[in-house]
Image (cartoon, rainbow, N blue to C red; front, side):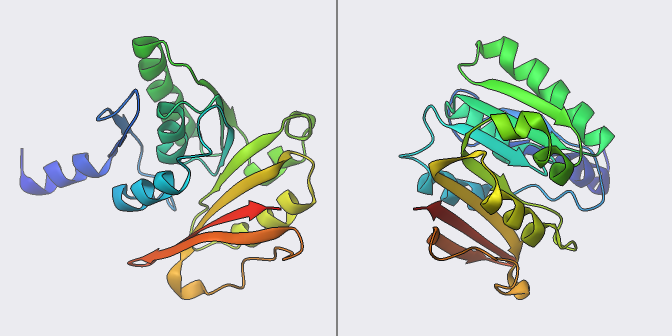
Length: 203
């Protein structure tokens, strides 16, 4: 296989770092704006979440490749809801779940939803669920992060000590973070290359 073709194939996979699916690879399609969270950032994030993840109810909005949601499930979150609007990405998420879950009798349950993330937050299903951890990694060239954070802050779907993880381009600064300091605190933050990633805790 030509070197260029090998590289293209490799770019369509993400490796699960730890947990029951450690070393397994998940496939994802080439979709504009779909940018899986890299291994180094995921490893740092899940170190941050180590004390909070076991048995947690997680929401992966803008799920994309599913790298964050599958990693959380692999590390024994109780439930992971993945929301994604792109049809090709949804097919890949479901295909990966169909392979991983039967193979290991996973402790986590996975709920994969084909819908726009913000529209889903307005549904009855979203309003009746309570999430402990939310992953927010929308396309960098969009303004979805700020608007989604505003909706989440006003919603009833978060537990009292919920955590929200965000990713954005490092040059975007802090304008996309409309949190009230009365209710949220910046728990962790790091910048790796062009990615600014943060973990907020509700208090």
